[in-house]
Length: 241
Image (tube, rainbow, N blue to C red):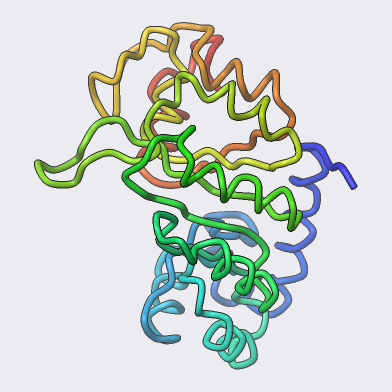
């Protein structure tokens, strides 16, 4: 079954409405309604997760977790109904057992792969195996694209986003969710990997803008400083969302 972006948004809205029946007391009034955190990194304890959600006014969350987290997340869902809508699984994709671990995670209830954040090329063989597996299992894959290190020792992740169109063509049945610095900075056509969070006007015709318009299998994750910067740096630009 093929779904488009509008259908995805409608489904998320429906999930949020249902979850609010259980968690609306935790949703701050300033948001005007239930809000789902779709990029919630798993904390060690149930209490720590709820503290984060309540503190930010989130009614519920989509959890990003390690591949072996099924049992723990199931327990938390039972203890706090409506707060944890589902989870994405991640693992070290450079290891030979990565595909086996991710497949097991989906069998155990994960509904996607991610956040995948590895020191490899976006079009390299390590991520390529995961892209193919995601298509085979019918789940989306959330990728962290970063070309500029934040610290002297951090390195970069899923590099080569400017050439990602070839990947979208090669894996048309894979649903990709783009995230992080390089994904959002490339809204502007003049971005050249000079900074993680560029400022100023957005020049229309950026790689991200083009790929989102041309490829129905590419979606966008609005979270983090990267998403905020992409959405807020130039509100009047025709290239902005």
